[in-house]
Image 1 (tube, helix red, strand yellow):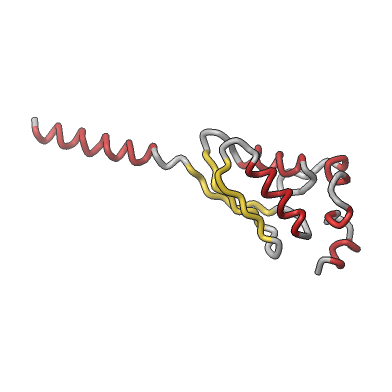
Image 2 (cartoon, helix red, strand yellow; image 1 turned 30 degrees about the vertical axis):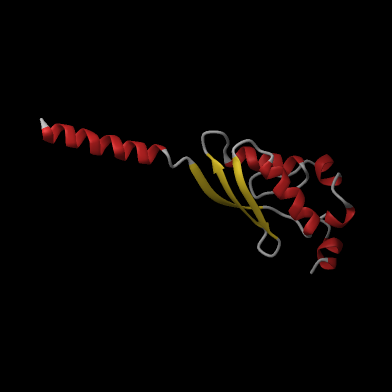
Length: 117
């Protein structure tokens, strides 16, 4: 009887510990060229329900995320970033969203890219 009780306790503790790991960490490539882009990308990500942390690196163009998988997913986060005008590898911003960003943030324009190098 003691062995059964011990086994059940260990299994229950293992299941409880596993269930508490709800936060996922991911990195997504997002296009942008400046500090205003950084603020816009991070703000759009953080406003997504379930996102706990979003940090975009200007040099690598990588958005590092920590989010609750029960509340959101990468596709939703990328769509919210695209809605404010920034492309990811999987989801492209509409022309309307892209054209709504500040003129210095038009990252698809080669002239703007050269100005930010």
